Image (cartoon, rainbow over all chains, first blue to last red; front, side, top):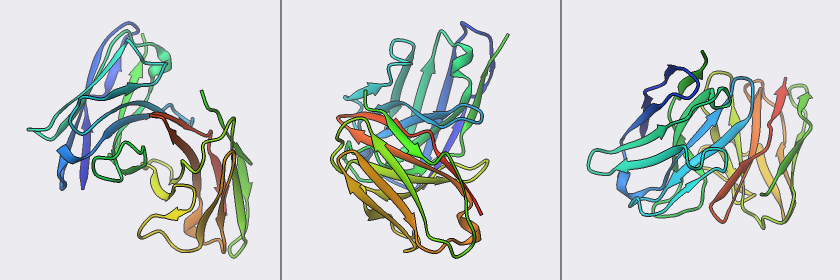
Amino acid sequence: VQLVESGGGLVKPGGSLRLSCAASGFSFSDYYMSWIRQAPGKGLEWVASISHGGSNIYYADSVEGRFTISRDNANNSLTLEMASLTAEDTAVYYCARYLETYSSSSVSKNWGQGTLVTVSS
Amino acid sequence: DIQLTQSPSTLSASVGDRVTITCRASRSILRWLVWYQQKPGRAPNLLIYKASILERGVPSRFSGSGSGTEFTLTISSLQPDDSATYHCQHYYNNAITFGHGTRLEI
């Protein structure tokens, strides 16, 4: 199982960014996926989750209305579109795969290496 | 929203010690609790889920217990490699919250 995030970088407050996660080594379309972030020196914060087929989507209150999670099962990829970014969104963003196939039980078994998003003027 | 409170926030112990980290939920989460280990600069690693089920490949010195609002992670005999930050996380009704983490120094 491999998850590789990309798309992080420096963005100005109010700006937008698109993160991607390329998945390999497993049947991507069988698993719920999520984005989880970690601000520098802080704890983990769940951002969003998406069901294996893409029909069920959940967001943390802190990002609802600003972030959009999506997936492309044909290309084994997960995306997080982020808009109206603020300094509080500065973090390492991890994509993660749930433990069990077809299960919404949010146990994150496999994680990517993370991609750093810095929101600063 | 359910809040998780971990204690202690930092812990210093010696090789061979038995250590316990506590995670308290603001209301019952039944047994929907996960523990992760995270080392500096690395992604978290799944240790235990559903409060007490040890993930494959995790050493048996790690164990979890609890239900409802109080949960514990126990390391029976500390090893140098256990130096890390430990996070609890609940998963209930598609809402996910993490504790603030416990930093364990060996």
